Length: 292
Image (cartoon, rainbow, N blue to C red):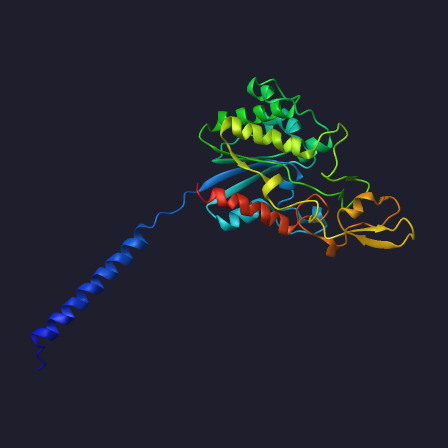
C-alpha cells in the first residue's frame, strides 16, 4: 500500500488547487466573453459605393468593394448598398423618401465627385443650417441627414469626402470620360471645395468624418501607373506618367483604351478604386466601426 508523506501530500494539494484556479479562470473567459452586437449599415453614395458586388461593371478589373471589405473584417456588421451610379447628393436627396426607408445603426454618406464634375451648386453652410432644400449640396445633405435622424436619432452617421481622381475613362465606353481633380470644373471650382462642404457639415453636426480626399492616400499620382497615349510627335503609343499625361490629347473615337490592366493603380480607370483603393477606404472605416 502506497502511503504519501505529509510533504508530498501538501505539494499535490497545492498543484490541484492551482489547476482548479486555472480551469475556473478559463471557464470564466470562455463563458462570459462579450459577443459583438449585430449592427446594420446603410452605405449611401454614388458609383464608388454602387460597384460593390458588381465586378462585371468594372470589366472584372476589381473584385470587391469597400463595404464587403469592412464587413469581412467586422462580421457583426451587415450592409445595405444604397449607391447609385452617376448620382449627386441633390439627386439622392430628391428621392430620399423612396430610397431611405429602413432604420439602420450606421449610415455612411459618400458623395462629391459627380457634384464636382457636374458643377453642382455648393451653396453655403447657411443652406444646411436653414434647411433651404436640394438646390445646393449643403441643402441636399440637410435633407438626407434629416431623414436619417427621423428613422434613428441615435444612429452613427459617418460623412466621407470625395476621393482625389485622375483622368477618368469608362472601361466599357471611352466616350464617357472626364479630366482629373488636378483641374477645376467648368465653373472654376476645385474638387477640394466639394470636400470642404462635407467637412463643414461634419463639424457643424459633430459627425464622424472620413477625409478620403486628404487622408486615403489616393492621389492623381497613383490612381494609375501610367496612361497609354499617342505621342503627338510620332503617333506611336507611349506610357505617360502623371503629370505628363495631362497635356497629351486622348481621342476616344480613335485611340486605344488608355489604361491596360497593368496600368491599374489605386483605381482601375482613373476614378473608381481598384481592389487596392477599396482596401484603403475600408481601412479607414474599419478603424472607426470596430469601436461600435
